[in-house]
Figure 1 (cartoon, rainbow, N blue to C red):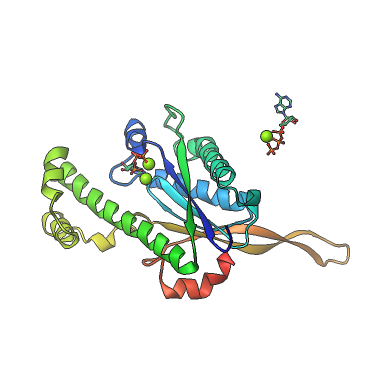
Figure 2: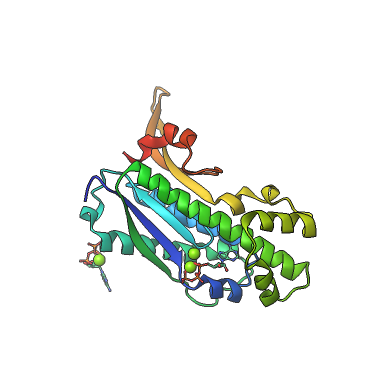
Length: 241
Ligand code: ATP
Ligand code: ATP
Ligand code: MG
Ligand code: MG
Ligand code: MG
């Protein structure tokens, strides 16, 4: 019900297996992340009411504008149409990102609706997802360094990391592998935000040489360390109106 904000989160089904079968680079396959980002951009460009999006790994959250009347705000319709659109874009764009890798089986994405009662709740939700991005990425970075360079088995590496706190994991990366975690790609550490802007396109020119312009929706990506930060939302709170 209004004035809640509607968020749809899609997440790849069993992508642990999908990423193995398709030999994704571990811990982060950049092409696979870029494919996810392109699918999300396609969603924003397809559905006018989706104004903002955040994602990492095999998931993306889509935020509808507050006043949206998309499918009369019926959750099963909104959730299913976005998941199926996202999935078919993922499949059609696969070859663009992996020209030499055959798609071995059809992937699927689950989706759910998250209801945010206010902008503050939305910010807390996004902060929670971004926190998860960081925790997962830091853990996986350690795990795969231990396996690839440390000569450990996956089980041994998991055992080493079991009780390590966030700070310990950064220390481990630094001391054993000479890696400064904060130097790794922001794409991996922070995830990707996408929002929509309207740009003016020149469609044609009149006889007197004046341009005929049309407004077009364009989705742009950006990264931020703190998705719930004041700086971004002061500038973009209007997005979800
Ligand atoms: P579920 O069906 O419950 O979502 P899942 O296997 O998809 O199960 P997730 O928690 O969604 O579990 O995790 C996604 C997994 O997909 C990650 O753990 C990682 O192994 C893999 N994965 C996703 N994207 C990438 C990527 N770009 N590079 C490497 N691995 C990836
Ligand atoms: P909505 O998004 O509301 O479902 P819709 O255009 O898909 O809109 P439906 O009532 O589902 O409306 O009808 C599907 C339409 O798709 C049919 O009216 C028909 O025009 C077309 N269609 C579907 N399958 C076929 C087919 N095999 N051959 C020819 N036309 C088809
Ligand atoms: Mg998944
Ligand atoms: Mg996931
Ligand atoms: Mg139909």
